Length: 291
Image 1: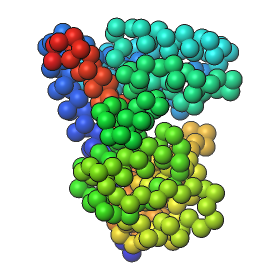
Image 2: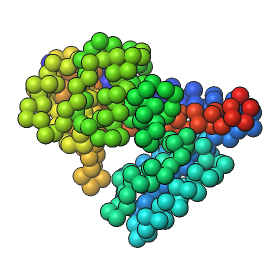
Image 3: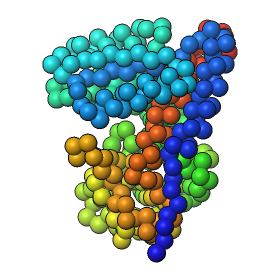
Image 4: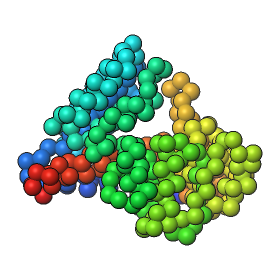
């Protein structure tokens, strides 16, 4: 029986945040204080926890943080006002609209109103287009974190077969684009499948790397994995306060590398959010002639 090596996201995040902190110091020496904004609509428990974690991490690396809280009883117009406020703020280099939104709110409309250069999540159509064209810009945070994880643990990606389970706009779709780019720790043959596919195992069993991004608990089982393969659980669900990953924990008996149930992709996502914020602050410094 195989016991897989762990892909510890906390280790990867620490290395990224160390670099971010150095860059923040350099910016502050030039008179630029990086700032991250968050917009939270409603009182979804996991969303509140995610936002709090982002602000805590900002403190660790000396990034200023700003927060707008909108009640679920508010209107779409209130959300759009918050977006305009952050677009106009000289203190906010980048910001996010915490997803998902309560019923009655249109996330895409708010996203389209966002200044693409302040898009900390890298989800604005302009930035997804930059990703397709391999132009500089913020990369969606969870895909960027997964690539950083593969790089940190020196896992071969180029020329390998990768199967991504899930096609969502925040993870599955941008990740498949990212890993096919002709770049280091990419340049892979990527197949995108989803929960509507009749036999997922027919695809995943041939893969060198399987990345689950479906938000479907336990969708990846041991008999779907080739012995020694790399397995990353990016999708999660919640049952009350309990986090349920896409990858069943017993997959560790087959895989060569696997993310832990806690402390896998999550910490790297937050680290990449702050890295995108620093990138935006550096762009502001260049425009001001300070870099």
